[in-house]
Image (tube, rainbow, N blue to C red; front, side, top):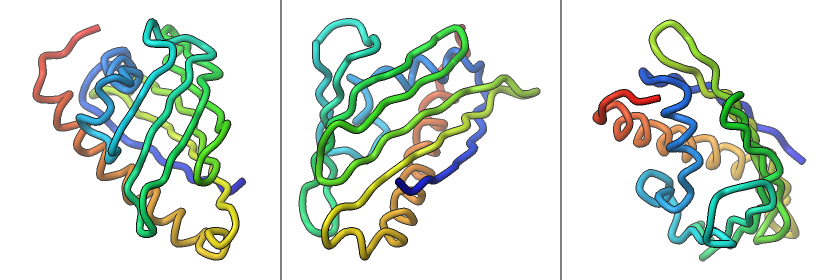
Length: 148
């Protein structure tokens, strides 16, 4: 799998950012996703499945992931790809810093078939999209009062 690394700062406590990042039912408010479905429709735990669709250059792309770690005390999260247009999975941690917190996000992806030839372009597109999405999330979070 190919890897992308990203650090992103927020001017809010780590717990508040973690809670918003793991509020998957509200993900479409800030992520560039067409749809997001969580199964089972209950508390998010290890084993919860996430089904999402994204509009790509060649049409709709579908992804299925399973949460493998969610630790609210340590502000750590991980999922693994179990299906989709191509495999993409992520893990991240959030650490407190002087004026808020820093998100350390690793994304792994494995294009398939013809998409394999476009792997560098796909990686650049994923990174650009993540940065835009996180900027939108930061705006949403920082407009609300600090919590946690």
